[in-house]
Length: 129
Image (cartoon, rainbow, N blue to C red; front, side):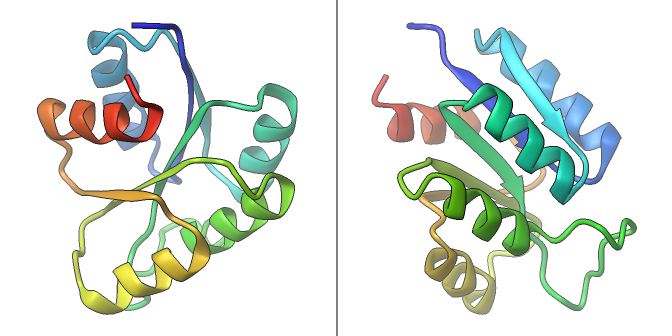
């Protein structure tokens, strides 16, 4: 596998840590983390990762961090690079969330909690590995 860089954008630090560990076990050594919109933008501009994994939740499941909204992060990063690749991670597979995310530019989705095989397959599909 060629080395690819990934940015995890999720306000839940323990979830980012879990995902980072899983990605490491799958062979992705360079994983950046962002817990806010500002961190995601700054890290994306500084590192230009190959893939962004972003958590997007329905409005009825408000984030514990009012500064984090997955759709806003997605839009901000798409404004920086319209061809960036995004993998949505969500607890909800509802049609409204999926449609909203697709309209925002998401390329693929996985339902949380992440399973290593599903994550690996989605990343391979996006990165062509």
